[in-house]
Figure 1 (cartoon, rainbow, N blue to C red):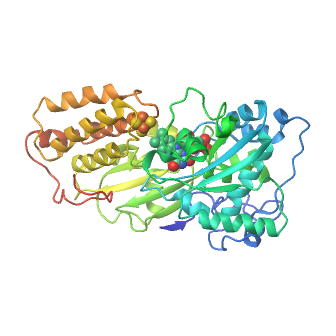
Figure 2 (tube, rainbow, N blue to C red):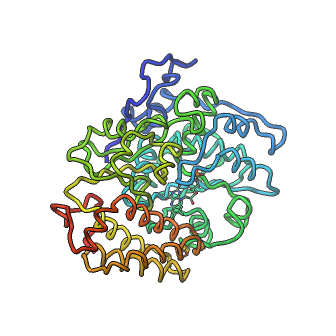
Length: 436
Ligand SMILES: Cc1cc2nc3c(=O)[nH]c(=O)nc-3n(C[C@H](O)[C@H](O)[C@H](O)COP(=O)(O)O)c2cc1C
Ligand code: SF4
């Protein structure tokens, strides 16, 4: 999948103090997309890391800077990054930083592309986060396809005498829920990549029982730029409530599928435009990931941001935008997703194991036009019954996805109940999933 730095914001912005990078333009985290992943190209694009000094761990100036920048997590939940940093920095005893590059979501590529193109920016973020929370250990949990490039970058930094905690690399497990933060901690500690459902979040008790900062690698890359250029620079793109840029994986019926860096608040249509436009009339978009939400084509006009997508019941999630063409059937595509996601349950919580299987069976019947008219009411009831009933948010995500399908494909659902389907080629999939 090709990386692309989409010009979704002013490109003729002034240069910063080093003249190394446009002060407010794009690309930011993908600035080294065309110059390569090496340290020399990285330093030429971004300049050296600034030095911070703090007398007490809980008063590290980077925490304030990140707070002012308004940076939020890019791993899916959008949690304010400064709040996590402050919680771990305030904790007693040794702390740990975990950089999450698991990206087990099959249609998302943004973290892998970022690690391939800008490994040193990710490592800067790890180093700075470790300094800010006083961590004595840093672990990069990386999808196996990118652990090599990250390992080479760590070795290159050591050769150049760059300081800081030297991160360990752990190859991530690649099944769907392996990237959930408690599963990541469990994997590092015990080689079990399943969520623990512990009432202690990692910032209280994480790797080795120590307070642990778990951040997505894209979050850490933005943090490294905030540290260099400041909060005002970061806020020069994006919106008041959601500053900065984000990486979007654009897929499906677009001319140039790839990973694009966009100012938060760019319209869905702008992202589609950056990806070369539609190659077929769109039926709907899947946003956020397999674990995401369907929105109808009226969503083309809204901002690709939490605030912009909220009225449609959607969120940017892992930054996926997938256009499904009218040749496909939304109900059949949802059945494929529900079957896949039910199969990805970590098998520990009854409502997740049995509930998701039952939901997938029911959506499968609907897709095959074999569901009786009372079946959709039963399906809606079951969706309510799995919400909040797992040790992690997996069942909630599946319920949200299926609910959004019932709303967006309302007419098609009725046709299926009446044993009809309007899609010319329902056997086709824009999602890359097998027929259920
Ligand atoms: C089922 C599931 C899968 C997840 N997969 C990932 C993942 O692959 N990578 C990631 O960074 N976060 C993933 N998350 C979110 C993490 O739990 C966590 O919120 C995130 O790593 C925190 O980083 P951030 O604050 O920088 O976003 C997942 C969450 C759930 C519920
Ligand atoms: S809710 Fe599902 S995926 Fe999450 S821990 Fe329980 S069984 Fe595993």
